[in-house]
Image (cartoon, rainbow over all chains, first blue to last red; front, side, top):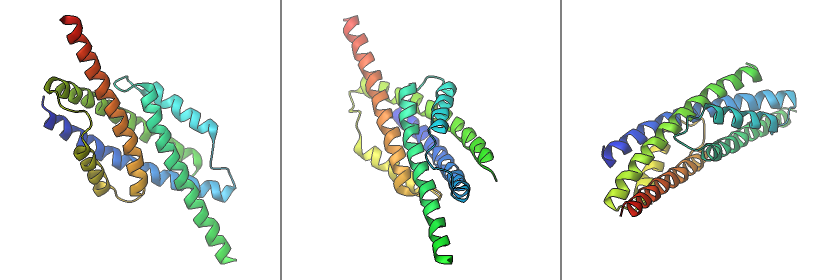
Length: 98
Length: 98
């Protein structure tokens, strides 16, 4: 196995991660809209704890749990930002429509 | 579409990301071994720039490029750590074998 082959595999893995992060962001927008409509808070510590519990349970150990959690903390942070932005847009639209 | 459905979809997406991050870590270990054997440096700015160029080209815009890059910066950071650890183990084994 050489460097070039491993890098090609990583490029293919990254492409799949990009697709999944786009799908995840679309769902986060959906959640943002539902939360904004229902007046629910965007930060949900219980849900975030559940995400970290779930991913470490699913981890099969090529990557350490701590490293996996650090990556997902960034994913969750961006997800929260997406929800916040979508709710600001909705609130803005409501204000303009008044 | 309700919150529960969106969360189920996110859980399924996260499970797939966990699998991909495990595969990526396995490749990073492979690269770490090759680099250690060849005496190559672990930090490769050109390769990292290429990764960010590639993922933003593949992005289809549900998530912003900046957010995508921030997530991949964390993935690359963990990947570097994995390569460093594997090379330390190899060096240690070589020392012990002397």
